[in-house]
Image 1 (cartoon, one colour):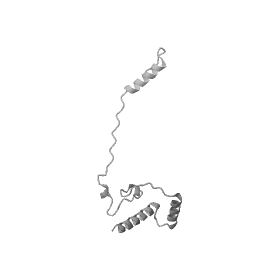
Image 2: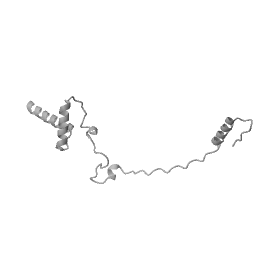
Image 3: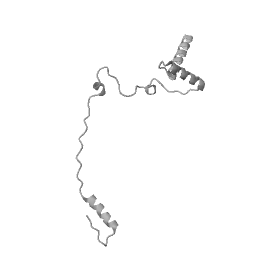
Image 4: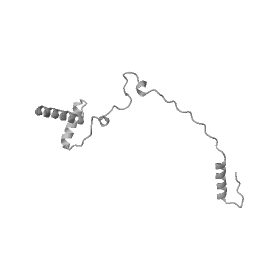
Amino acid sequence: MHKASKSTSKYAEILGQIEDVHSSPEPEPEPEPEPEVNQTPAAERSGPGQGRSVGRPKGKRSDPNYKQFSVLLRKQAVREATHLLDYQDRGQDFSGLLQKLLDQWLKAQQKKAH
């Protein structure tokens, strides 16, 4: 380490200390052992009949059979329908109600066409 003499500035002393630190060899860190990787595919790790049980169930947004649409509906009608669906507590949501009504309409149109 450098000792500051009266003729050197405090900055030269600091610079000398920094040079001493950078010039001394640092011990090489020991390589960390690699974590064990389970090579078994996920399908084989879960037992037979065991599906994906962790986390939330797959929703409509991530289901490729569904597409989100924007429609204009009267606020009061949506409020009343949502309230009735909640009150009936049958597990059907507003989206399910609209899907059911659309399917019924399509079925009726197909009957008319034949």
